[in-house]
Length: 340
Image 1 (cartoon, rainbow, N blue to C red):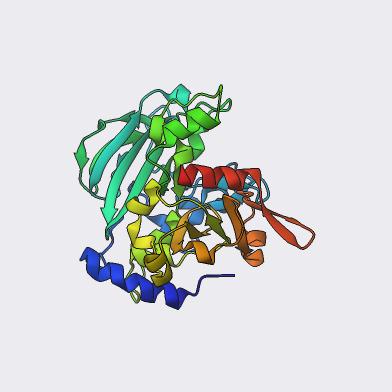
Image 2 (image 1 turned 90 degrees about the vertical axis):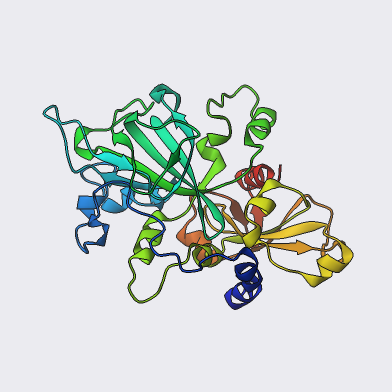
């Protein structure tokens, strides 16, 4: 069951005027390499790097595209265009938009991403974090301001996985994400005893990916201007949950996704009803008064879009027992992380 889209957009109109930004920013995101074959219908294998020669191009795309639909891939694997005499990729990797470098991991052995960079962007008042992975070298440092199209790295094949990325599928793994929680490092230390977190707030688990392919294709649409905020507000709902939490960083960082509720304004906020897409991105947050909340549980699953679940089950946020749906341990963990 979905929050009515017309309602979301109507309520959201308050934020358009309040934030005073250009709604239809022209092509806010650029390709991170010179490979633009995404726009060439039928030439997907020139753009995407599939996981193996016998696998479809979709395995290099975003979503539940691996392990028969049960493994999430949160970005695009964009194939190299150029190599040196040894067959190593030499493509420059560029910033997708103006922003600030937040993190550079130069120790490839510490992440499945290998060497990677995270950059913060503000588009239409929304904070979005781009990530560029498997780099051979980075040419920027944390805190540095970059411009769209500026070279920030050279493509590579770095990773900490047992099998190295083959030369023929060398690529940059490219993500556009929301940041889940400013307090991720503290939450991880409290909830993952004995496990390492080498990247602080810039651990990949704290970055929930958006479908970059849809964004880039949306920007290329000559008929309908692309809006990142509209794209976020229009996500398909996997489930709706009620959280008994009233003060967590996501509310402030993504205030444009918080809806108005006169009853909660009048009586006080006792929790939030949150719509999540299948990758656990909160895209609509409705404050609720105590009189609107039933039960005392910290997290309540209110509804599940069964069609969306069956189409995209890989995050395993919910599970069905007979006719009843429940949050899984992974679903509850995600909500703990969001609201910590």
